[in-house]
Image (cartoon, rainbow, N blue to C red; front, side):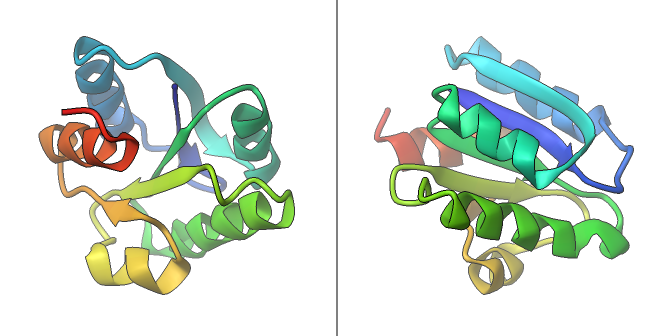
Length: 122
């Protein structure tokens, strides 16, 4: 199960929708949390069974909110069994590493590959 959402303060959803459709088409169950999603909604999604959290941001000003989600999942004691992937125009693998995410995907097909890799599905 993959929870996907655009982080707090960001209202862009075209990229998120593409990733959702590609993941769903690859057999993943999707929990689309929408746009402008606060960290606690991602935490709730993990509590409801999401093994992967996919964070999207298009604005550089909302990038720090990705780190807030990673920290919220850690503070809830749920990080160990949760894989976190980020995507969006302003982010890259170095930023994923910096905030403690498990991976980065530059586009929807890469996101599917990365999620499969993170959950051990070929």
